[in-house]
View (tube, each protein chain N blue to C red):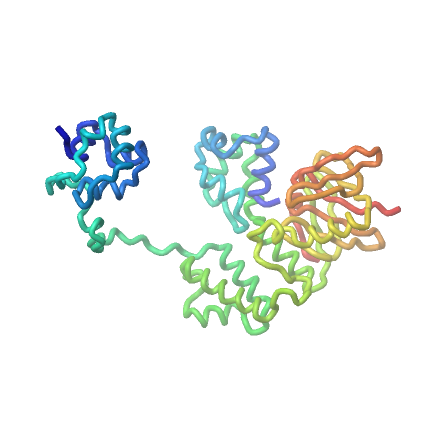
Length: 135
Length: 235
């Protein structure tokens, strides 16, 4: 799960405060918050901002910095490579199972995998993917 | 005794834009009236008088122009002459390339047999890390245009897609999947983040929600953000 998806998830678990509310509580600018949640490239370069957000949401700073290295476009590239080269990919979901299979299609919201051994197919929402590995 | 429009306005401590907002007379027209370029029309006279809380006969039909030193709007603007250019401010240095741009460049280059880091750096004459953000953006644009040329939209290839500036572009393939599942009346089993399992046939969906009809006949609308994954129920 990218930093942006994770911050959006944390915001939802806290009752859905808007950017202004979070900004006033943390001191992180609204512009930075919007950039973090909405950009597909690597964002959140300011560690001080991430510190403030980690304190606000009550999560370890490492949860945010770890996800900063997994921006959305990287997953897109991995899915693209898996599809193009017909390679299996492992998708590790947050708080859930890991799915390993071949990519049938992907877009910016979801991807469908064909699981091996006749296990069928599964459509995974990309915001649920914590980590991935091209096999 | 009738006064000039600008005299009354100044006495009332109103700016032209305030008078324009209050009266409904465009600010540019008020400037022309105050400059004496044309007489105030009957309709505007009533509107301005009401806004200034004076009688219509208190406003001179044709104003004497304001004294030169009191003019707030530059004469060049009214007469259509171009303004003198502003002196240049301090120039900011160009933004350096972002690490994600380099990653993206190399990712796009991997699609071509004749493009790699070496050829890109030979093209720009410097290491990719020394590019500006603008230069990197230009290189990205060239590679993307080449991709579109070599893989035009509509050719049916699995990685055929258009820019995701519309919801349909963001979830083009999921849209097709859900459409097919709805038409075929497949039962889908949704697993939510909190572990709940919800199954049903698709009643409708949008880029952000899916509505299912559950086995008991009840309909439930799920936000896609709450869904981790889903599978088709095999009969």
